[in-house]
Amino acid sequence: MKYGKALISEFPANEVSQLGAYAECLQAEAGAAGGGFPAALRLHIGEPDFSTPAHIRAAAVEAFSSEQLTYGPAAGWSWLRNLLAEKIARVNGYVVDPSEIAIAVGGTGAILAALLATVGVGDEVLIPDPCWPHYAMQLAVCGARAVGYPLDPAHGWLPDITRLEGLVTPRTRLLLINTPHNPTGTVLPPALILDLVEFARRHDLYLLSDESYDEIIFEGRHASPATLLSRREFEEGRIMCVYSFSKTYSMTGWRLGYIAAGARLIQTVVTVLDACSSSVSTVTQRAGAAALTGPQACVAEVREAYRRRRDVAVGWLKECGRYTYTPGGAFYLLVDVSDKLAPDYGVYQFAFDLLKQRNVAVAPGSAFGAVAREYVRISLGASEKDIERGVRELCAFSRVGSPC
Ligand SMILES: Cc1ncc(COP(=O)(O)O)c(C=O)c1O
Image 1: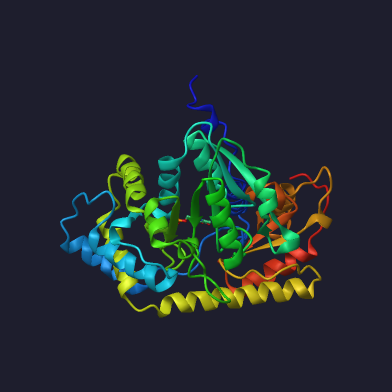
Image 2 (image 1 turned 90 degrees about the horizontal axis):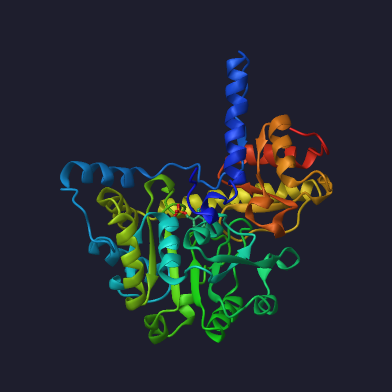
């Protein structure tokens, strides 16, 4: 038997997807047995429950009927890259030439292209612990080694530069940061971002900044590390900033993201993008252009909805005596459930039992890294009513030791 590369074929299954599959399985089983079983409350999934705004959909329909729909340039169409340069200046606060932007299949495609362009077999990459599980999966694809740097729950889930220093070896190539952050919802303060930029400079590392949630921020403004670099340093390479349409415009299924980096570095990234996908669908790019040129009220509306949901979740956690922090962005919240666990009863089993017995799906923190193994992640991509019920059930549930 041949299974492909061991690093990839032996990569552990995603626990959040497993839980989602189990929720569907429970419902199907109940349906087959003739019983009515309501769909589980979906607080596990990192996806907006909003629909893509109508004017964005209409632009795609128009493109279907009027465009030639040929291959496009590997970096993306210049009309969209021009708009993206304007967006980066307007929202992210730094100047970038359209030629320093490349369009990819989602933030996922942009991050993978950035990693394939910069790290290789045996290289070490510093990623946050906890973090979005795809980083480790993508590093396995590159043959590189993920080295988790802990985020400290006692200090608002922020990284500590001293601990980062201790993880650097001669093989370290890249530091990955993510703000606003999945799964904590933490927003890195500008002073700490500056420390991280200096750390990357000190050790001559690439800095990959995942800013996929840049417009979902509840207090203050999102700070991109690119704003802390001189124009010359940006042009020299080192830094790569990734953005996405998925969360800002509720466009997860459209698969549209982009990356900004100095002209020479972006050329390397574009070669990877060309090798992987040739180009992103023109229909999707037209939809992205409509998102950027159309009314931006939809962005503010979605942000306000997430803020209200965050406040509902935080309010109920306070009510139940389980409050630890208030996330400043993205749409996630980690809840400490350590008191509900036991040495032979981990958070994965806890999440399965909560689903089976209370029909509430939350993501086990172990899916995001060792530091979150006594937490569950609640996603705010659900209605206020569902969030309230889900948090109350989560707080009330404490069945220790019942195997699924
Ligand atoms: C932190 C983070 N980065 C990047 C992505 C990629 O999103 P997409 O590929 O839909 O742009 C996600 C998706 O959940 C995420 O949570």
